[in-house]
Image (tube, rainbow, N blue to C red):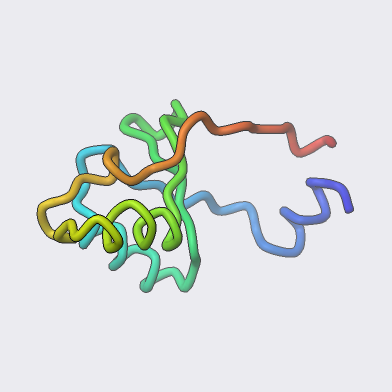
Length: 87
């Protein structure tokens, strides 16, 4: 399957969260949009990372961190590999 096919099937909207957002904000965003991961971007243009429910489970919950006191930057995955939609 091509990337363009995935975008056609899943949609082209990109949901993002800031690096300084709390994990509580992240979880609310994931729930609201019924998705499992979001792009991390402070300016809406630059991709700083990606963060998923699994990232939070492994880096937050398993280490005993509070979702209120933990910033997205502490649990996000980096670097992010990207491709163009033409591929």
